[in-house]
Image (cartoon, rainbow, N blue to C red; front, side, top):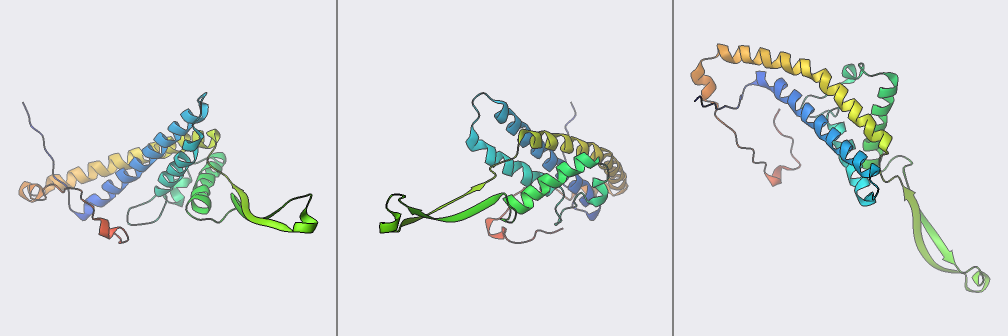
Length: 203
């Protein structure tokens, strides 16, 4: 019986392959959250308290695939594969994340101060108290969630060939290296440090 093991490739040439797989992971997670939202909205007993957190999870995870940072991201050239309708859906999800979820910018939120009074006694008593009102868009619609499922499928298909090509290139490169050098890279245990939460990780 054969026993297989692995080493972590700690070489610059492995970064693109790792980044592409990171993007693919985010797309799969966004699709999973979108499917959960669809299921919740189609339920006969919708748990409305889950609609907003699932919408946030969808939009943030989806946007990670397109956000600039340490990891490679899907750029404007990658968006060219979308139809105009798909591009509109992408822009909507992206702006929902940027202008509503991550920052209070667009008109999906309104906060108002209110002066309360008794109609019958307002002339004598004046304003009785101050309160607050307004409104918010609490989450994405079922249509939006279906759009995310479609978009993530499109982008994952788009990445498949890039990942396959990169895997092939990387395998050829690693096979040219002395086996001792490859095996010496060892395995890395993923242990992020809480104190580094605000620090940029290494590229």
